[in-house]
Image 1 (spheres, helix red, strand yellow):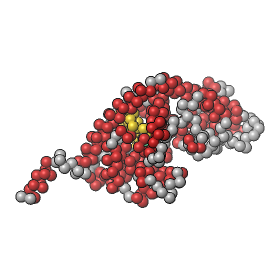
Image 2 (tube, protein in one colour):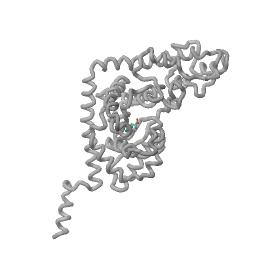
Image 3 (tube, protein in one colour):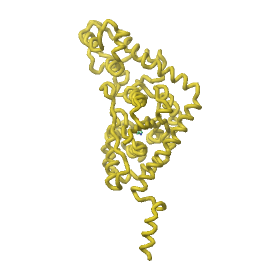
Image 4 (cartoon, rainbow, N blue to C red):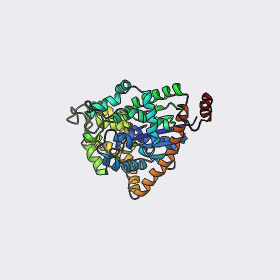
Length: 360
Ligand code: TRP
């Protein structure tokens, strides 16, 4: 069986380093591993509209931002198909059929939907489109017969729900759909990178993100203001690692060569951590180290972004070509689905014969 990746992001803002360690970095590695037959990366504008219905301009503006972030991270259009969700109308038709396979109470139990309803104060009136977006996400994944979905931990319930839909579909209508596996980041620090304020998650509304497109100076400023251990006042004080953003970020980003290059007095990140916990290692020094690590990771991304920013029409052309290609694949799956569901009236000669027979 072919190995196929599908994943994507909602275009509601520029992508940040949480997206990067949670998924983007991995996607580029998977792309370059050569192990996958097809890779589809989707800008989920239709999904973004499920909770931004009154702000289409925001979604529209951010499509190119997300595409630029993809390209600057190293996704390459001749290796990965980059496309826009709403350009594939087959996805809405698939969603419509899948809706019959999911109950309202099952959607209500989806932990991600639950959390998002709370976050957006939707309790009193939930838009139906938003409420059902896990179904549309199952359509995204199955339309491309994806076997592997690399996403962050918060998407786990979406994948479970998708697998249930596939199960149900295949058992009712016959094996037409492929059950996908989730691929989570293997480094624990990457599962949910906190914001620079130490709050649970990086989020635009909390203003605690480091964006992939931030300038060198902006990144430095944000790192120097990062939440550490409030009890670590004097350098000699013992410091805590739990909840300490600087160390969580180092866990996510630091490679052994970084220690050798920027903190040559230490053998490993573990040794730096021990010193910090013992006391005698100041926050500023560790922050400067993190800044060096992060800048070395972000510099090539920033550089590639600058190049692409000079040719925006080319970026749209990549999305257009990718969308055309993606639509062909989704159309072929939709055909399989219609056949399986027996809604292929004009293509099934036996049907017409049978019905004619009945009335003879
Ligand atoms: N829900 C994802 C997010 O919020 C975006 C998304 C839409 C997606 N469809 C998908 C991710 C299919 C993986 C597979 O970022």
